[in-house]
Every structure is written in C-alpha cells, then in structure tokens.
Image (cartoon, rainbow, N blue to C red):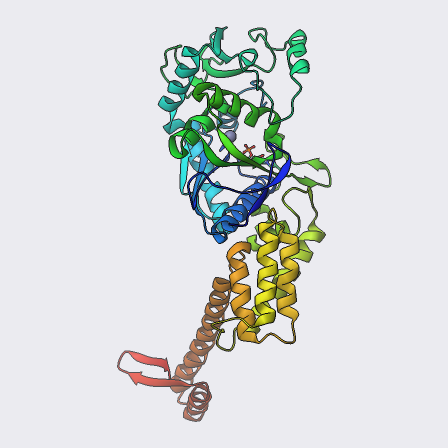
Length: 470
Ligand code: AMP
Ligand code: ZN
C-alpha cells in the first residue's frame, strides 16, 4: 500500500493506512439539490472520483458514501438566510419534493456523463430523519445542546476541540460571543441541530421530533448518515475547501461529542475552480453547468480532461481557451489511441513502457499528482521504442485512473463509423431500386458492382432488396 495523502487535519502528507485491511470507508459531502451542479461543484466530484480510483489501484475496496441534501440547507452556511430548497420551490413553482427529485436526477446525469463512478451508497437526508433525531437526542443527553427560540443548538463551549481541524483560534471563537448575530445563540459559532417550525412559517418539509415539528440543521445529515453506513470512526472524509471552517468543523463537533471518539482519520479537501470573475457560487445564481458546455459543443470528457490539468490542492482557473486546449489535447489522445489500437494489444509491457506506467502510478500515489502522471502518459504516446500494442495496454491501464473512457470511446467511434457506413450503403441500395424502377438496368448493375467492391451483397426478395456485408 503506497498511497500518500495530504490530510487537512494534520496539514501534512501522510502514508494512508486504512482501519480495516484493504477496505476503505470514504464519505463525500454530496449536492444540495435545489439547482443544477455548477462546474465548480463538478470539479470537486471529479477529484473525489480520482481519489477513489487511485485507492482502488492501491488495492483497496472502497465503500463510497455520498449524501444528497434535500432538506435544511440555508442560503448561508452559518444558519442564516432561508432554506435553499424552499426558495427554489417558490421561484420555480414546483413542490420541494419535485425540485429535489428533478435536481438529484440531473446531478447523477452530470456525474455519469463525466464518468464519475456512482457511490456505493447515495443517501438522501429526508430518508434519514430518524437517525438525525437520534443523534440530537444523544447530544442532548450528554449536555451538548440547548434550546432557544424554538431551535436546538449545539453549544461549542462544551466541546473544547471545536475548530481544531480548521485551525480556528479558540480565544477568538469565544471572544466572538460579543458580536452575536442570532440572539438565540450563546456564541455565533453555535449551530442549529434542529429547527422547529417557529423559524419558517412556510417550511414544507417538517417532521415530528421530541423538540416539536421541524427539520434538521444542514450539518447533521452528514454525521448521521456517515456513521450509519461507515461506523463511528472511518477512514476518509472529502469535500471542497470551503467546507473546512463551518460545515466540516460542525460535523466533527457533533459527531465526536456524541461518540466520544475520533470520527475521521483523513480529511481530504479539493481546491476551488475559479472563474475570471472570481468564485463561482450556486446560490448567487450565476454559474456554468455541464450542459452549458455541452450546448457550446464540448464533450463532458473535455471538462474532465481540463480538470486533470490541475492538482486537486491548487486553484484552477476556468477559461474557454483552457477548455479548448484540453479538448484539442484529448482529441489528439483519442486519435493516437485509435491508431495504436489497429493491431493486437500486447499482453505484457517491455521495460520502457513498464517504467513509464510505474512513474504514472507513483505520481498518483504521491497525493494524487495527476498533472505529473499525465507527463508519463504523453511519454508513452510519443515514444519511438514502445510498440503500439504495449502503448495501448499501458494507456488503458492509466485510463483506469484518469477515467477518460478511452476504451469505450473507441467502440463508440467505431459504431459511429459503422452507422455512417450503413447509411451510405442504404443510399446506394435505394438508388439501385430507383434505377430498376426506371428500367435503367445498366445503372442498377453499376451500383451493384460498386456495392460488391465494398463487400456488400444484394438479394432481391419478394419483400424487396436486402443487403448483407460479407
Ligand atoms: P454544495 O452543493 O454547494 O454543497 O457543493 C457541493 C460540493 O462542491 C462541495 O464539496 C463544495 O465544497 C464544492 N464546491 C462548491 N463550489 C466550488 C467551486 N467553485 N470549486 C470547487 N468545488 C466547489
Ligand atoms: Zn457534509
């Protein structure tokens, strides 16, 4: 086992050790389904997919759990603003349930188009309300909560390790009490575990609870669902870097306060995709979706390839010119792979190909250094000494990580060629039928011989002329 990962909790690159032999429990914060995912969100899911594939390459079996936030995520991470689902439902004149269903499907359609592996378990917040209530009850029993203004809050002053992973300063946190925003909170960093309907009159999704009819705070679902499916301590938790100071900080506080144990061993965070105009944000309403790019003529794989150009811990600037460059490079790769695949793929690799594949894998195992790994891929493509058969074998191995779908793209292209060919043949067959109808037998025979040259045999049957390729 070789994988090294940068752990946000320690701010160092560590050799990865799983809790259970070759099994890894990995939790990734999923989408809030009140709108389409923007390409920034998708960058994070691509990074998580690369991480999963890299761990699989390292011999692990991955239990990949992802939540779908279909309730309770307010427009601000810190309990401010209104519920994003309710806002979207009002704006789009659809029920909150229909909104959630529609955008969940849209999300997984996008991830499928990007060849992101489907999670082992994709779980909806609304299917886990009881688990969340149980968690709040546990916290309440241990004295970590208080109720104010109808809501149940987590009291961060009771949890001395609050903000440790995010390196938040405890002195400052406690001093923050002087600038209280929500007058129900003892400290501005206290967060809601359970809202009752006292907060929003028109909240459409509400459930009975020991604290009254209401709904869970956003952070709660990730703790409840990850522990349900992965246990009270598990290996990896991922997400975008924006979640470190609030969402993940609160997830840790409520999970560890409830169990009294360390919750997650490795915190792996992906950096942001930036636009020329600054940070892309779903809630600000101005964002680019995968479909925007598809409508502009890009293939979803162009975007995946573009994301491979940056290390996951570096910010990546999105520009159409960079996407064009990624598209050209990807098409060049596809064309080369098509060329190499004319012969038989090799069953083994010679020294040079094996060395480059090892370099590729080592870059992957070094905290997922995809840009460095890509250099080995291009070295294979350009090599004068590696045979085409070996090239194909090595490239397909590399693509298990890159996920560019190179093998099926080849099939697809062949299919398209076959379809084009079939259409061409049918056109000639139709012309021959027309010639016969016009009693132009010379023309009909001419077309028959053209088709024969292409290996197409015509049979005149009572039902009409049929053709087959011999
Ligand atoms: P959300 O649906 O807002 O909870 O975001 C889903 C995921 O996308 C989270 O892991 C976020 O951290 C991540 N994310 C949000 N904006 C960006 C961005 N501009 N670049 C990369 N990841 C992002
Ligand atoms: Zn989460």
